[in-house]
Amino acid sequence: MKIILLGPPGAGKGTQAKMISSKYSIPHISTGDIFRKNISEKTPLGIKAKEYMDKGLLVPDELTIDLVNDRVKHDDCKQGFLLDGFPRTVKQAEALDLFLEENHEKLDTALLIEVPKDSILERMTGRRVCPVCGASFHVKFNPPKVEGKCDLCGNDIIQRKDDSEDTVRERLDVYEKQTQPLAEYYRSKNTLRVVDGSKDINVVFDDISNILGRD
Ligand code: ADP
Ligand code: AMP
Image 1: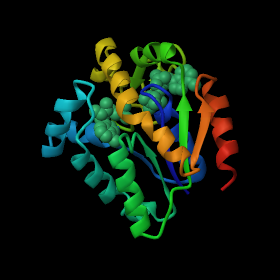
Image 2 (image 1 turned 90 degrees about the horizontal axis):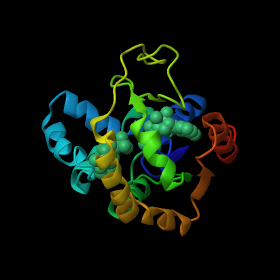
Image 3 (image 1 turned 30 degrees about the horizontal axis):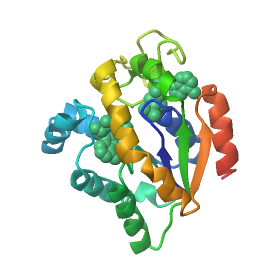
Image 4 (image 1 turned 45 degrees about the vertical axis):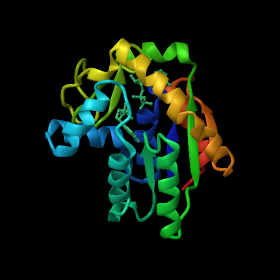
């Protein structure tokens, strides 16, 4: 099962990805998490990526495409994968298609999680994340069981630097210009499925499970 998750920042991609990955036993590959790990380890990739991420801009395609091509070649992707936050540009989508074609594989589903723009700001500014396992919480909509601690791994949860109001506005702008056209790209290939991400987290997951079916 090869799936990509599309949707604006704050749509709930990371939240749903953790649940999908666990139900369908496929690795959750988040380019954002990979960049953040590189930033915390101060790798050359992390140092370059940080310049863009702090401003709410996309990391250049040439850095991002190679990273994903390398990652999906790992053994754990033999039965499929779930890409969260990739592709984000038409160039990245074309690169993914080329990679899959060369490997005689194809994408099963491009899942677009739609959320009205006016609820995104509240979701993003209230988001708290685990810097260790990438789990996402919300102070109001999805609080952790123990305040300030990750439910999954127990580490301290933090607020992402790029979740400040100004950066969120920039990221939404970037999404509309560079990523939104991908909905049309996948619709024309008949792989696009759309879910209403404004419902409760578990209801969104039920809707997604109905689309993906049993595995
Ligand atoms: P994305 O990965 O698309 O940027 P996240 O999964 O991190 O989004 O979710 C953004 C924020 O919204 C998080 O704080 C998360 O807990 C919260 N959230 C996710 N899904 C829902 C939902 N269906 N209803 C309310 N809040 C949600
Ligand atoms: P995310 O964790 O998905 O919200 O991503 C956080 C940030 O990482 C984005 O705002 C971008 O700066 C960068 N990023 C993540 N994925 C990509 C991608 N596919 N292409 C370019 N930049 C990305």
